[in-house]
Amino acid sequence: MEITRVRLRFLTHPHVCGIILPIHLCQKLQLRPRQKITVMLGKKEVVATVLQDRRNPDSSIVKVTSLLRSELGIPHGGLINLKREGEVLRLGPAIGIVTTGIRRDPRQPIGQRTSFFHKLLLAQEGKGVFYFIFSPHDVDWHNHTVSAWFLRKNSKGSFVWRRLTTAMPDVVYDRIPSRSAEKHEAVQEFKYKLASYPHLPVFNQGFFNKWSVHQLLYPNPDVNEHIPETYTAPSLQTVRNLLRKYPIVYLKPKNGSLGYGIVKVVRQPGKGYEASYHTGNGNVKRHFTKLASLYQHVFRTRRIRNYLAQQGIPLMTFHGRPFDFRVHLHKNQLNEWVVSCTAAKVAGSGSVTTHVRTGGTVIPGDELLSHLFGRQKAIITERIKQASIRLATAIEQAKGTDLGELGLDMGIDTRGHVWMFEANSKPGRSIFKHARLKHADQESRRLLVDYSCYLANF
Ligand SMILES: Nc1ncnc2c1ncn2[C@@H]1O[C@H](COP(=O)(O)OP(=O)(O)O)[C@@H](O)[C@H]1O
Ligand SMILES: [Mg+2]
Image 1: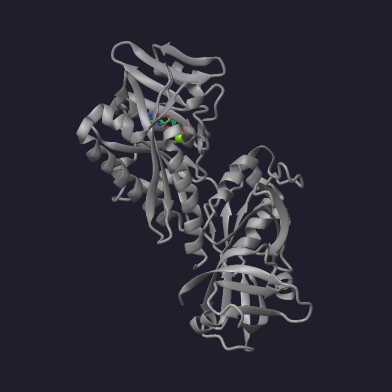
Image 2 (image 1 turned 90 degrees about the vertical axis):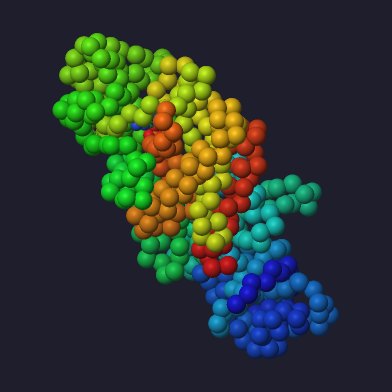
């Protein structure tokens, strides 16, 4: 049935567990005065009495008695959606973001990541949702409630963090910050319980491993053309074979990020091989006459079985520097993939990756493409967009879990072919620091709410 957006208010009433609706809403939701109806918020449900508000027949205000409020754990009033589903009246959606490192300090409840979550929650403006942050420790599995942090406006109009107890949400967005945090016993146990909780969708669970993503996508004919040839735990012979086929080979840690541990190997005809990588002291280049010595040097301090060897892509350049793209994708309220942002990342001088950490710069994707291609930029833009959406669809299908957001590292080679280097399930937001990508930043956060509404069936 149709969803109705209402303004929720509370009524102090010690005895009645009731919901008071204007007549037109009673009619629309097919509710009779004094009838009993199950009211649901997130995973909590309570039987309440329907009452008609005769004083404000046309308003969109719905009142809930204090008794119903406390039994359901309704966190606050204001804009919210109401939906009749069979014999149940649903209030919501309730969207919980789960993370670790939560504290009791209302100034900085998520420590240094507080401003990140502050911005995420601001996207609820005008959407009519209950949106909050909680940690695996905050769940009361027995009572189906969570103690969570909400961002609310105080009487002066500024946003403040409030800790409130509410119902277990309709949907959970996984923002467990790192692979190491994921390994904690409390997090493991939480994930296990969540998985066995009936009808509770969780999206963007866990982290991707470069090798498992490769194995999922390489055999798929829809996307195979975008996936570089890759081997796990490469032997010297594997690297040698790859270098016979391609002049460049990348050695990358399977679980790496931010370019840590990446080595670029370049074959120099008749002159041996060159290995480039980044160290704490900057970008390093070393020449080797024999591939065996290069291999030995690289894997003296790195574990082969944690590594991949990958066909190197000769990236297009901008002012002589290679560049690639971070394509940020989201699912919208219709469960369709959309690109929220395409940012070009231009490598720093001498760097083997395009990360800002190693001197790279971020430029809005279409600005860089206009510089390079003028009017033809539309063709390339569309090619990157279509490939990204096809890849996101393939990843989600192959994983078999709900994904609402993805950050893809995409490159174009000197012939204009599109490649994918990496898929991130918890993409960073550093590209959005760019002044001309602020709009995309907001759009991206709003899409997270929209997709949550879809998963919550609102
Ligand atoms: N096969 C490759 N060919 C060319 N450049 C690559 C290749 N693999 C990685 N790169 C470059 O290195 C960057 C980082 O690689 P990526 O696989 O995304 O690892 P990380 O997890 O460290 O970000 C890419 O954005 C790209 O610029
Ligand atoms: Mg990357």
